[in-house]
Image (cartoon, rainbow, N blue to C red):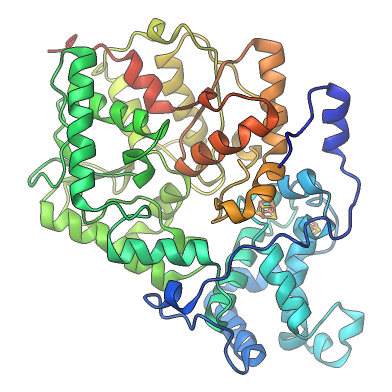
Length: 498
Ligand code: SF4
Ligand code: SF4
């Protein structure tokens, strides 16, 4: 893909009001899952006989289970408030990437099969039979939705396109038209324990390497334990943290925080993944199976608390569903909420004066912050409303002297998706990912121009991976992306509290 040009304010303005380009992304389609990718998930792996009827039956089942889905499909009044709120529409100009148009791909089938008017006068109410052409659009355009929920913030009825997109993907998996990337990753978690397929020996090797690096850098022996029975904290973190920059710098920071606070901790090689990609395909059964690994690891290791590392959708699943999926957690220490986010832990320690941070250690940086969608719009942190916005900023401000927020209409609950969430972080969707990053890149460019921002901090493994990949297309250095706990780790004065 060619570099994206948007360096002038006029061009940026132009991009924010895209020309409609019918079919602009009709060629974009992720690789299909094969029987091999789906074999451990109980999905058929190829389009089944009678798929139309089976798809409608599955939709009926989802409508019975999830009343919100029916409300979302019934409530739209076509007011248009959501149309220009999706980063994929803004980045591509394809009208089928307007949230309401995306919803209508499923709504038309709902109306045809589950409403009276749709049955007797389909043409009057936009009702349609599910045929091959429509299924093809489902597959393409429900894989151009990162389930970021930005559109729902602007919808007067709160219609959540993410739920509709999850339902469509769930139906497609059940009729044998699943997406390779998500299905393959969920299979790896079932078999090995993490998305990357890192075996126990590789994890131990990585963590021992970190111990050596940190001791060499600081002169302090900080432990990075694996499968440590009786540790206080089980850290569940995205496997990217064990593997790549800038994620691993965040993991280094978590270890330094636990060390200075005197909290014993461990990761588990059995549950070595915070991410739960089953949410992206809308499968409660698969989400449940993935979450149960965390329960087993916590019981086997005899820990007292569970803390999640920096990952957006992992925190959404943990915050919203972990208790339902894998509770009760009555074997853990009741003093602590289940689960906790690493930012809540660090924030609390900072407030209590248990960490010694020197923000001047980051004086080579002017930092901005990217709110991750699944933290900002689908979960909470701390015990106050808006904690998910304030806690990350409070931690960053304790670790750096120069912090600048991005423009107000692009932060907190109005944040733009990085462009790679919702199971789209795959190279077969690179064009979509680059184009979908446009609104966030424009906001970043604005604070670079106005305030000399040098770094963008994030708290999500997908955001970090997506940004490091797509930022060079916009002329930014991929090294601008940092983990929040990298900033904390660099500022922490090890030894000061010992
Ligand atoms: S949930 Fe996000 S990606 Fe999906 S349609 Fe809405 S704004 Fe677009
Ligand atoms: S803002 Fe809500 S009601 Fe209006 S068109 Fe979009 S989904 Fe429909």
